[in-house]
Length: 97
Image (tube, one colour):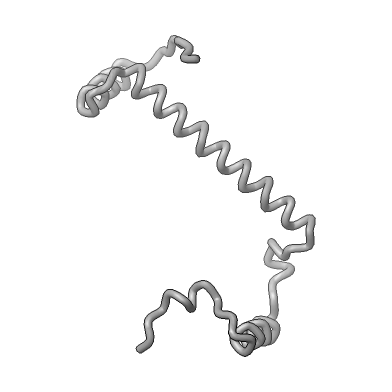
């Protein structure tokens, strides 16, 4: 359900909004509504990603720099992956040569 809201902006902001809405062939109301919705979704996505990250770190996934692998551990991990026939995702997209 759509709701009407009233906002107060400076004259130059209102002028810009009218020009921007005209350029996009929409109303100022729809333009502002879409901007607010994008901002809301971006914020929601951030918090969802943070929540997923927090849950992963509670499962023991090393998220912070203090838990990173040493050079030797990274090399051992890479070697064990390549000797078992599995490839890293970034390796699949590379072209030989």
